Image (cartoon, rainbow, N blue to C red; front, side):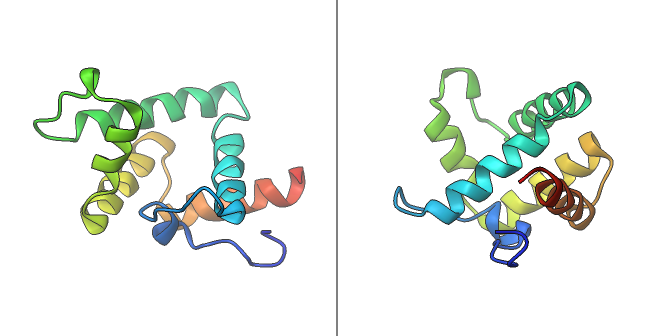
Length: 112
């Protein structure tokens, strides 16, 4: 997928909705999860990333919301959502979205 440049660019992917038949998007999503949890350090950063996103949603009672509702809330308003996610990636992983994407692609090329 990465070798063929068949991935959706991360800024677009983070705010896209894909259906249950979209195998390529699910593969991309799982490769991101694999990358984000491959080491203890990344697992901690990923946990921090999720917590930061939860804290940046004003007025949202995330404790009582389902995962699907939180995801919908995060994806609602693509530009705002992307800005929040990029800021959380920078804060938690110490990388710009472009740097994060490049490191993920490099990881995929060596692992798959």
